[in-house]
Image (cartoon, rainbow over the protein chains, first blue to last red):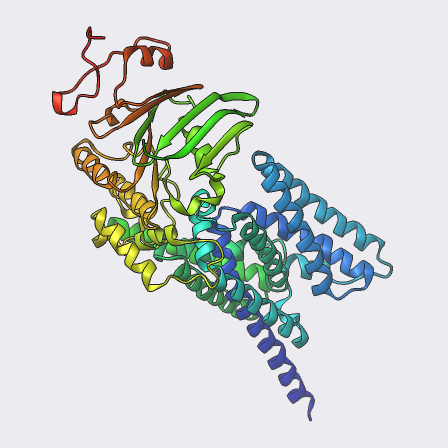
Length: 274
Length: 253
């Protein structure tokens, strides 16, 4: 096999992995992002995303695999946030801010303490979709399946909780349990998205597609489907542009999404006045 | 005397250290049409939420159908005060009404044919069946109110709680709305909260006034003494024409 063929094969594989992981992430992003947007817990999701940096630090410090370490830590911080936001509702935003910052600080210090550490920090802050190994794809597929199965199972309960939690409570919908479950799924989703756009940009991919979809859809499930499709579209276009223009893929994906948001807003306005 | 289905006994409730209800007691018989009136901030909604089990009393007991409120939630219909929340939410009128069919442990939470039949009946009773596929935010205030009543009725409740149900209904539709409530009251006990005394129509069977403390009257009438107790300032009573008059004639007391 010549040098050229090998290069081409390698190129094909990492591109293929990038596309598959991008699609898996988009699928989950659309579903969970929709629940984040309609429940108005974007700030909380941002807190979980940034606190995940503590998990990355922990994974490196302990020598654990990225997914296991980060997922464990994120689930833990999501649990803390669930307790805090349920117990002290009116102070929830400040508490989320604290956990947000402490999680990041823990991550930075653990990385300082990790001997011989020289991994590329930037790849976790801004994503490294082009470096997703095939082994991660299976784990991502398993997580995506779990998230979608849970949302399908509890769809009507999530709908009732998101629309009117007091009425849902009266109908004996397990609102507190669903809220904790949702935060847990956000943690899972965040860990997956970090691969694609990095933890700083997680919140954009989680909120921009659902926010666009909300304007044009009539039910929560169509909003989820539309968000997933939009998210997939933004990821593919962003990936292609970043390759073409030699830009950071995560940031390019977000700029494409922001462009989509602008176009959708203008179109909505034009439609209203036309 | 009909059986008592709601019993509030010596209930105290404070919110952030501020007393909201003091020593409130109330007994509601089956078939009653009770209106709870009082000034804003006087504790009407709090009393309703205590009966619904959404709040727990600091002292005293609340029983509904002889049990703790959270055990009998499925036998109660509730129309909340603020129906204008979440107007951008992507959900159809039909799906909002179907929320009233949810129950604990429904499992794979799909709706059955029975749920859909009940939802159609409730929407038709409220005369908004043709709006079923509209997005909830596209309804007018009155239509929205009727959608929420349909959501409360779709489970076939024995008691219906309305919190400021008049707020979103325009003057012309009020008469029609009262008639619908009277019709409903033949089979369902109704407890309505209002700061607006206009709700006191001839259909009302008893009145309770809440302003920190609770005054309950077995008749649908309201007296100047009651108003003075509740509002702590003179309020003029205006009686409408005889068919709708709920007030004692002035000077006859």
